[in-house]
Amino acid sequence: MIIGSHVNFGVNQLLGSTEQALSYGANTFMFYTGAPQNTIRKEIDMNLTNEALNLMINKGIDINKVICHAPYIINLGNKEKPEAWDFSVNFLKREIDRIEKLHVKYMVLHPGNYLKQEVSVALDNIVEGLNKILEHNDKVMILLETMAGKGTECGRSMDEIKYIIDHVIKNDSVGVCLDTCHLNDSGVDIANFDSYLEDFNQKIGIEKIKCVHVNDSKNELGSHKDRHENIGLGTIGFDNLMNVINNEKLKDVPKILETPYVGDKAPYKYEIAMIKNNTFNSHLIEDITKEI
Image 1 (spheres, rainbow, N blue to C red):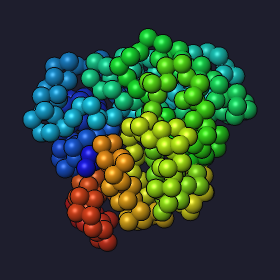
Image 2: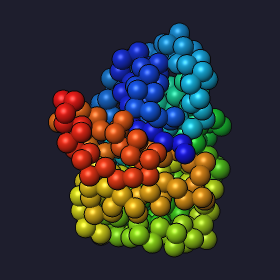
Image 3: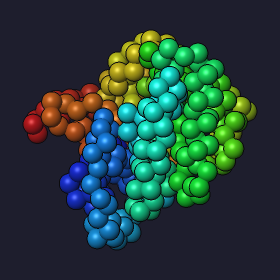
């Protein structure tokens, strides 16, 4: 089982991320290279990077299964303000350059928002942006995240994800990140996850799935709201999420938790233990609260 969570990058960069992941009992993790809401970034410290890579080797974390997430402020879907779209393209290029220095090969990306434009126009804008970004990149794969369909999000259906992949020139550098909360909120019943995977394999190819965000949902099926819940405490449920995590077809795909903090306490150590034990802890919140 390749299981981890979102971790921080701000303290000691990749070394701090690795140490935090290990403290949760994880063997992979996901991080942002800076705050996802702004452009403030520190230079990559190669000494910290090399320490992190050595620690990963010693502790059994495969750098090839570590995930980076692109900033939220990137929007390739809308070109009403060309300068804003150009910024998104160039900023994502710089983020890719940063994770190449970290030896990380996967970057999860929210495809974009169409805002006041037509969805079909937005999808073509995303394709154009990815073509520019991937033109001179051979090391990093961009993973399009499945979205809940909140507001004007693109990537809310398998067909939209397929359209983007099919029209990117270097589509061998584009994969997919499934998000269980987003799938549920977009209308995909996780109780029928095997059927979803069969459909995905026919339309896109299951080999394109390189990451799964494992989150329960506060919302009913098809709500288009995107509100994550702790594992087993939402509308998807523990057993359905375990069926995703343990799915044989996704055995080698990293599973990443993005569940809510309890107060100011990360839940990941407790949730990862629960997942490894394959037993729902009905006292999850109570156990986390005891440490706050």
